[in-house]
Every structure is written in structure tokens, then in C-alpha cells.
Image (cartoon, helix red, strand yellow):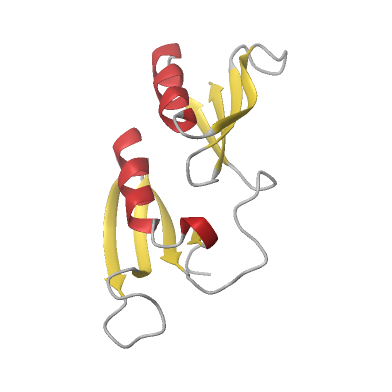
Length: 134
């Protein structure tokens, strides 16, 4: 097996926002970058310039993303989330604020017994994140 990576497909209202989301995510976490973007060209089945396939890293872990303007019966769901171990309360609060801006809290930042500080959020793109003070 060569690798396993999380794959983000931006559909529905989020179609066309893959690059915007990758730029946002890579700005939040150290050791993160957009590695490559292949775009749709003129005459292809998706709008020209949108993301055909992209690779990006968050804290050194590779992920992939695409845009899809086709009609799908699904979008992102909290049943799958990215779990983030923060090193400090300041880092946790900063990431929490950035991800909930235009997003929502599924579990507010609090002490839940299993963690002194934890929050579960959905960002502006509908991607679900669990934030933990590790």
C-alpha cells in the first residue's frame, strides 16, 4: 500500500471552493502547504479553472481535494471529522475561532471530562473538526 489520504470533494453550494478552503486550512496550521493543483480546462465537464485534483498538507499530513459541480445526494458530514491535537490553549482558541467564523459549534469549547478543553465544530465549508487540548 502506498498511502491513505483524506479526500475532500466540494459539492453543492461548496462547489468551486476547494482552492479557497485549502488556502484557509493551510493558513491555520504550521507545516502546511498546497502541494499541487490541477485545474479543469476549457471544454471539460466542470467549470474552467476549478480544481480537478489537488494535494495539500496540514501539519505534514497529505490530503486531496476536488471541486464537483455535478448534482450529488451528499456533502460533508460530522460523522467523519478531522481530529486536531492543540499544544496550547492559545492555539486551541485561535483555531476554534477561525473555524467557527461563518461555521458552527457542534459542541462548544468546554471541559467534557475526557478532555479539559474540547470542541467539535463545522467550518464555513461544512467540514467537521474535533479540537482538543492535548
